[in-house]
Length: 331
Image (cartoon, rainbow, N blue to C red; front, side, top):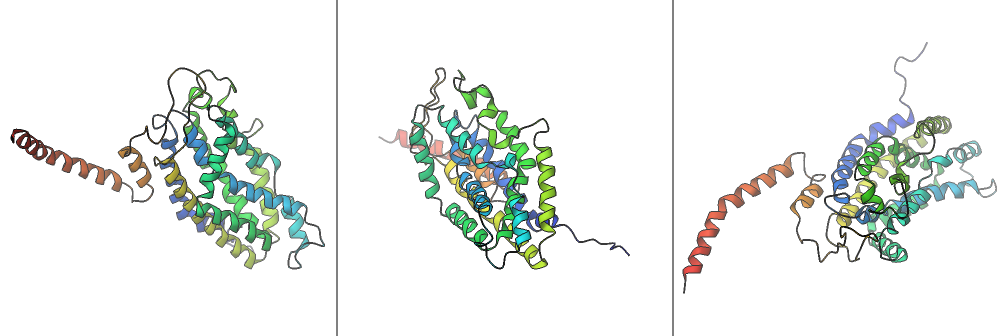
């Protein structure tokens, strides 16, 4: 007799457990995207600055897999099932790896500026070092996975499968900024926008669908080797990942959405000036502040507050004008 109510797969359990957090995280990212694109900025440095905070996360995950590949039977923990270890070694797909792609994207974007690439790299690294939530998350990845290798599963499922869902929307939004924004007016170094957005792209004619299918197959093979206790640990780690990513995005918001940049960036090519420094930008940009608040306040609340502020300001303007006129008449 077959079970009329089959248990959900591990990937489904992760999705169900993290759905509210996933929705909130997506809203945060979508709210921040416009801040890294025209008309809020004339150059891609806010994007490269923000996305550089994601690089250490993918480096930690892919670094853990490299350690796993070199892990011999004599070195492995006695609690680790040998079959599970070998299955996890087979889980990564080379075309799915993102860290090197993202690193190249950032370096190529830095080449569009007159500021030395090494200076920008140091600038990005300093920024990341001043992000305690990111540092804590990366440290947790390195330590927790070394103790419980099955916890690699939620990281691969959440952070790589996202590239095939919300990642496609992000890619489309970024590409709409156009070649001149991403490559510069003269396109000296690269000819295609994807040359600097390769983190979001996949090789082959199927745009990654074949990679996604193969990964899901390998993920299911590893899942079949887990105990119920290990599956519960994977789901719990999935919720931790989503919470941590939310915290990292908040730190990125503070970097991209506020005028705290101390580096002077100028496009190499001629034409319209793209120089922007903290001193040149206005101290307060209401539209940017509203975008940042949208992922914190309930939907519609930001617009309501902004509308109320506008009404109050309009009602008070005649009063201010009267005061000013009276003061002007005082000898």
